Amino acid sequence: MVLPSGELHIREVGPEDGYKSYQCRTKHRLTGETRLSATKGRLVITGPMNKNFN
Image (cartoon, rainbow, N blue to C red):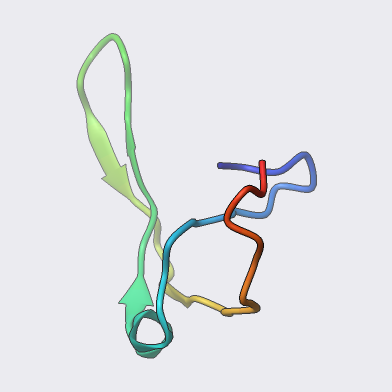
């Protein structure tokens, strides 16, 4: 989910997920065109979180 601040919140990750790099991929709803972000990022894992977090 994308927070109002623009940060991306990803659920159900583990410590091993923080060692990989990720890119954003978007898909245009009308044309179907996909694009990858120009830069890669890493996850910052803070937790554990309450499983009932909404």
